[in-house]
Length: 276
Image (cartoon, rainbow, N blue to C red; front, side):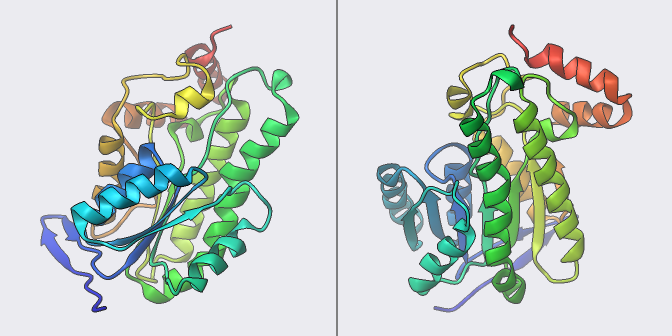
């Protein structure tokens, strides 16, 4: 297959096409993961879709193949286990696939006082949101650096910019993702690989169904298309930033959170998300 990776200047930005490259997307069965799949496929990228729900993945794969004419590989896998990065890498490599773009989207949140959260749930949240993301990134990063044709996108959150009482573990995991990704972006800045931490606010996905509460949906809801569109625009820029916040209201709020005294931001966050 001939690989095409073209850049067309449009002012300060470029339109990237990913024809002949492959993007692996975790949490690809719904929400932001499904939207990333659609938008990358529309630019010619072949796909590897990873999530637990094989039926949902197969349904999405069928639609994407028909609509965009790309190759879509389905890998049903529970990512919340030690060593999952190497396991996933070996599975994909065993199918003869080299990954150029990695989108770490899988994750979930919890909403209750920390002392009331089940230890097993806390461990699973940290394992999926942090350990799996780092492990998968480490497994695929060498090949992506060698390719220099794609991107690494780690989905963080506006929760990353301040502690979130009532969502203590979730906020901390996303703060980790933001810090980790910006550091990797700097380490690889001369490689040709675009590295981005995407920080969405409240988004219309299944996240709040899993969370079990709508009270944590602070601010105006964005659609998955708007959030992924923000990431795509950042990747199209001549100098992709290490992180981007989706939505101007969220960008303003994140800016204030970084400038206000820490105690003030914690108190504001607590009042915004707590419903007890």
